[in-house]
Length: 611
Ligand code: AGP
Image (tube, protein in one colour):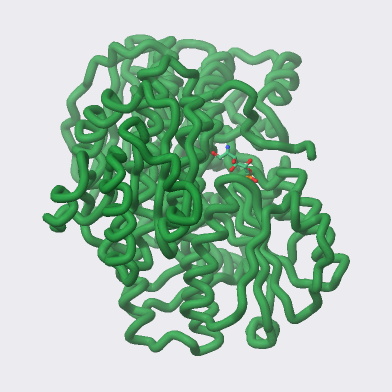
């Protein structure tokens, strides 16, 4: 996810761009840049690292330019660097682009443009857009943009400037947000509302497949497909700046929970052919021959990422037929490891900087294992030291409690399972298509489920917010989800919670069950459903207070529990991605009722870069 801002009007543009980027920095902060038009020339400034670096540079730049574009980056293709920072230029340097999104066919377009003589200066997918628009450029920038994006597959929110049309900015969007600001002093564009609030609250929301031509005293919107004019409604926004950064959500954690349909989609977008179920993971960094030679898989992670690893063990052993070990990184790095070139070690990390996971990676490399990271931050240390990385395109995760990064890790691990099954021919094509279709449908299922879930969970949160303890139970691939649900609750509400394999209850924890003990059990209709229900009956016989999460069509659940959280039916293998969401939301609501600091819980940090 990146942040875009643009302005054309009567005011000095650089302060507007810098202030706008500051308010969008939560969307990405590994590099930043801006461009303005002065004396018939485009002046471009780009810096790696935080926005403060760019501000420092701009302090020394004097200009009264009134038109420009700015960008703060969350890298998806090409590590953070000045060369990869936006804005990107065409060959002439007369045209610049800022972009938020993923161009799925950028390699194909890059090769085509190179063959036509275009010279590339970055590793990004975005630069392709600058050259593509240049290719279509005649005498009208808007028409060139419209023609160029017809060749693009993927998502984009664009800002474009051309030296030869100094009185125009062009904006376009498809599946990446872009809002426009209207004011008597000029016209604005931005990825999100916070960037515009200091200047205007009169907002136009650009829709998918639309573009806009911004001028100092006018703003027109057109359809991308046929260029016809679109009449848009100007909406008055009465958010304060703080709320706006969270797009109206009270906390980043809640916003990120609701972003999960998009982050899961972004993780498999461009890597999975919905028709054939074929997966492509060119970034894996290993040849098919090396993948065929694997004898064992070792997953290494901490915290929530370790829970993702535990889920993946079930998938990989089921579909690939290889032994899979899962280690907590702080244990992995201190035990005797039996690794070698026939073992793949997979460090999983949202931040890519967790000290124990990084130490485990280094040890694995020293012992000759091949390393494929699953990570959310392009260019982070873990990715730079791995043989290959499968990025989770979840965008920046600001809330300390990991939510969208977790389900994106699961999506990436499920893709890896399908890919290994494809290479090692352990999954029949028909089964692969069925599994792939289930993943493709999942974002829509979650999108539909989320709104009503909040209401349902308020009742349960009110009832149990004062609990001292909580037990979470699960079986199979949902046992790690029980662990994750317990971790979410304890890390943001400070209630002591434990996740357990439901079959373990009678080996000790059942002694905890009494009329005050809330027990939340995950009961999807899977191959261990009957066993799970028996465990719930054991809790009921001892007067435990039962909350069941299961299929909305399963009438049995209400017969044996006090509360039921009914969910849509999905493929058995994908229930972990669906069933974790009510647990995230329940933790969020209970923490709120207890007045806890949801986004920054006590004693915690977003990335544990020390042992
Ligand atoms: C998750 O809610 C926690 N914030 C924490 O357990 C986290 O998952 C763990 O520290 C690992 O971080 P990483 O994924 O960035 O390596």
